[in-house]
Image (cartoon, helix red, strand yellow):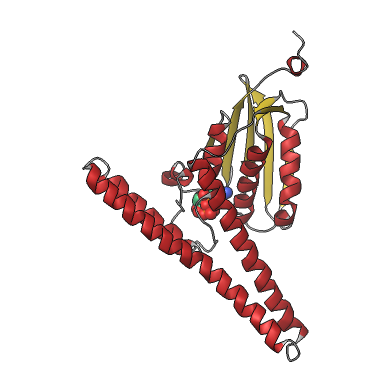
Length: 267
Ligand code: ADP
């Protein structure tokens, strides 16, 4: 559904990057064009699911007596699916806007990563019904200064991608460990992985891997929001592919501290 938006935006961004070092006036003109291309796409991508919701709701209202039980259930399912899609899309756009305007207030608190992973998993429970989860985050990892809301959003986006791109029934592993005064966290899936040339570009806004069989709806915003949030919390995020089999690995790295004793104001 949102492929057209992502493709148009990616093309426009590529064009802008090409002229970046040529001259500023041309760059500004390209930016204006990008903005209007984006606005056009955004309105289209908001209108399409809405049209589908209105159509199904109208049919339910006007033909409810002549519809079979299955027919009614299908219309309701369409309404729920499309509304959820709209909801995710708008949530992504809001996160993006907050990031870009600097309004994503970061409030760092010492946290045990395992606790936040638990909350993110509870939030993602509904979308992970068709995957197996292997959780290996020791509860005694050193504390990390994080914003719980932003951190959970990052984990949610990564889990959402893992379940979107990896087949139903496959395993999503979440591992955490301490290393060189950092806490490391990996989300590992059994999907197709990411083409090597795209491993860094996937973190750019609106970037989506171009594939003929790319059927998953998406905005190309999830990972750029992840990177923005992770960096705002002083961490890094990288993507790699598995060696042992196909699958993507997303690695988060945050400096540890402070020690729990310091939290209580003791020396
Ligand atoms: P979206 O999923 O909405 O397209 P993202 O910013 O979350 O946007 O991801 C950008 C692109 O990176 C996706 O379009 C997809 O091609 C690729 N990608 C992200 N996560 C994975 C994954 N776990 N496995 C394979 N490809 C992925």
